[in-house]
Amino acid sequence: MSKPQVSVIRQLPVPYFYCILIGTGLGLLLGTRFYWTFLLYGEAQDFAWDKYFMAPFINHFLWGFLTPLVFYFYKKYTLVKGASTRLWIKALAAGVGLSLFHEIISYIIWMLPSHLLGWEKMTVNMIWDILYRIPAGFISQIVTYWIIYLVFAGLDYAKRYQAKALELARMETQLSQAQLHALRLQVQPHFLFNALNTISSLMEINTKDAQRMMSKLGALLRSGLSPEQRNLLPLWEEMQLARNYLDIEQIRFHDRLRVAYYLDDAARQCLVPSLILQPLVENAIKHGFARHSGAATIEVRATLTEEGKVQMEVIDDGVGTDIPGEQLLDQGIGLSNVRERLALLYPGAHRMSICSSSGKGFRILIEIPVVRAA
Image 1 (cartoon, one colour):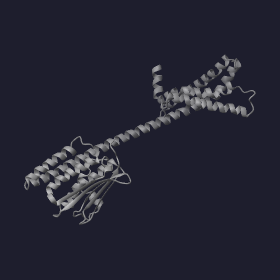
Image 2 (cartoon, one colour):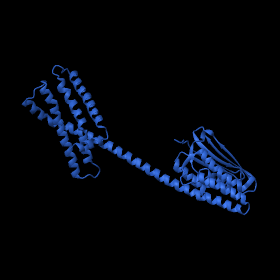
Image 3 (cartoon, helix red, strand yellow):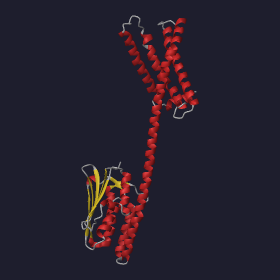
Image 4 (cartoon, one colour):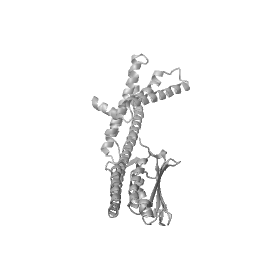
């Protein structure tokens, strides 16, 4: 018997000690109220504190001790929508039995010390009087039983709701991580194809530049595209990945391409999605610079705003376009990939915009919340 009892006590949603403490507190409170009520109505001469104070105290104090049994019956006969009639009968019978047990035991605990200590001797008439009062007291006990039962039902429902919410959050996190991994894998072959295509074109023009480009590509693959690459990395590392990519493009375009970098010291250690800048600088090369024969400048900036956001910008002075920014974000793999990743990582807490007009280049801006490495 001891093992199941210990098990029930351990399963209680409220520590057993707190149940006893609550029962004791309620007993003291209601017992005191009962006592002062008698004093208020001038019955102090006939008032016996052991009778009128101890009765309500023992009543609630005992329920504190019996809470594991109430919880046991709740778990065994949990009443839910669609419960069978048989289950309802068993649950009601358990409540009746425990309430009757409580009523009888409370009288024993109350009257036995009174008899032994000489406060009030137990007689046959007193026993008949107790038996006469048991039905009225029983009604009070069964109401108390179902109140405790419903409290356990509410706590159990809240616990199950919280567990489901946590499970749902865990599943959503796993889904988001899987989607992020898929999006990141999408970027890698896209980038490699462009880089290798550039190297292939250089092989026919300048083999030394092609070799240098292969060396840069190897460094980029080692630092940024390894299978163990994190989804988030410090901003300074992400800037270095963008620099590696632009170094490759500068080999391709020689002196025609100028690149400027600015990284706010306050933002260096902020975590950002890996390979988030590479599609932006690739867009600047492909759509802003590669289509005209003159020199152009690409500026890569990363700052910490006054509102506490990490702001990343890629600006070029290339040919630009009159296509609306929202439409541009839906075109191609690179920018749409970035937007999807940001939506997964920072739902409702990020901003991505693109501004362009003919002859004035592109300006792509990203703002994300500040996340620092632990």
